Image 1 (cartoon, rainbow, N blue to C red):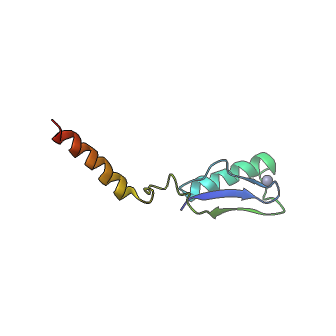
Image 2: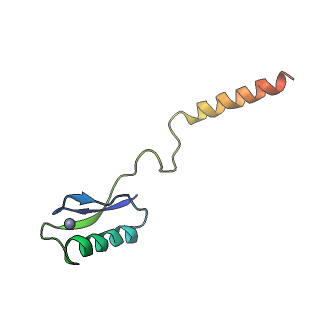
Image 3: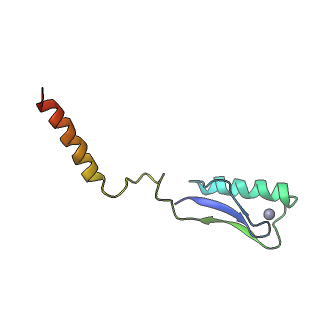
Length: 82
Ligand SMILES: [Zn+2]
């Protein structure tokens, strides 16, 4: 599950989600250094786990076996025609 950094004071989040927590921690250090002089913001911040989006998660869309069967059928039909 990916991680993202969020600063509650600035109401900003990591520009992108990270697979590794250490990368999100690096976002936190970077933001604290840039926006808060290296200190933790008073309103709080932190790295949290977020649910993976349906795409880019390494999962195939629902119904992929039918799509595979369809393309196989097309391939076979093409071969038999010769
Ligand atoms: Zn901030």
